[in-house]
Length: 358
Image (tube, rainbow, N blue to C red; front, side):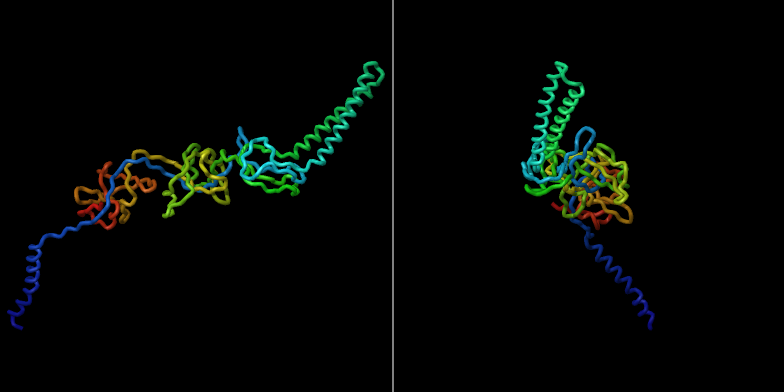
């Protein structure tokens, strides 16, 4: 091959590169522009929670007041002959609720009354004779003892009849009635459930590992619904209260600790209802926070995109406590009010022009 041909072939790539450079130099530089939505760094009070589930229950008995619920039981075997209440009725302490068959008790009272009347007349005669010393001391004492015995028998008969009239042990609402008139009941048979709906609390089972952070008086937030995302932290609270009891022992079957919290009188909740509970175990006021979607983690490094003019530049941050949709952040140069990218932050280069979506 001739040397001139080899020279032409060798110079061909250089010519192509020079032509491309000449064309590029005559064209404007292309700039990437990304459409994003924005927010601002704000100061907020953030909370750390212990999440758990609980059930609404009547208050248990304490040293100064009885329990807020009662299983009304039959004090003896018999036939239910009268019902003076109905389910859902509000009753006061001492109201008559049920009555068992009183015929035998009435017969015993009548018999005891006759015996008392006879003993009274007999003792009256002995008193008259004692005035004139026409009776021995033994006969006088026997007549007096007989009168005391018959009076005691009458009192016992009346007491037995009162037991057949079953009264409300506390004020509240009759949640359920389990027997009807004419049915036989036995000793300790539960006739009805009575509960004071103004005295309810929440029984909560907390995992033992998290129970070490609990303290009496800590506030709680509870809800009965769920969000579409299924996240407990995003369930809006509907009630509030505070911890009033923390069990000193762990349930070995569930590895949980029983705690109780107060419930408002007008909560609208009912015994047996399950609720989701957030116990506030820490509060951090005046912390810099951003929406959780504005934080990106790449290779173990957390970043946010801070807006300056019409461009966004990534900054390394240290994430902290998360509370709902907010997360605590710290880092060099971060200040309250700085504009940041929220939606659209994923995929952003370290620095780029942006267009804010309205």
